[in-house]
Length: 114
Length: 112
Image (cartoon, rainbow over all chains, first blue to last red; front, top):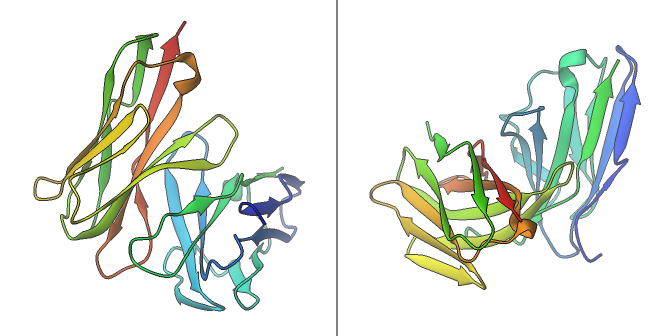
């Protein structure tokens, strides 16, 4: 596609429910990132994929958070047993492989846990 | 641990003014630095990428400089317009990793 696509754009869920957030990277981009942005705060790194492997999961805040990626395409971020502190905008980015490649971000999924 | 700071946190200027946004980072071992803008409720739009071997990059009215040894980057916006109103974020990619570390941003408002 022309850009990074994320769905849904907005998600309201009840505390304790599981949610899945989807990211479609730019075609040909082998690297994919998930970030979280809480209201009024900066971006927190969650996880990095190179192809379908995740060499850096260091930012996942708890074992309720997991992510997977199918080949070099779609990625899904799953949050189990959601808590109110999970409310945030979840942003996905993709890049070509390499150290000096430009990152392109999607529009984000705004998650609200009530 | 790499930390990125942006000053000022917010800035309000009249239309037409030239302005400078600042970004500082604590560890000079980086691959590159990237500037983004974020409009309210939206994702991030890439503005400029500066590789560690470069001193500056230009795109239209935007010019970004990098002084790696002092841990600083500046984003210069010439002849500001109301459409430039947004939050500007800088991010560094530490050497040896592939993730980006973001600053908390500068919220810019350009008044017509």
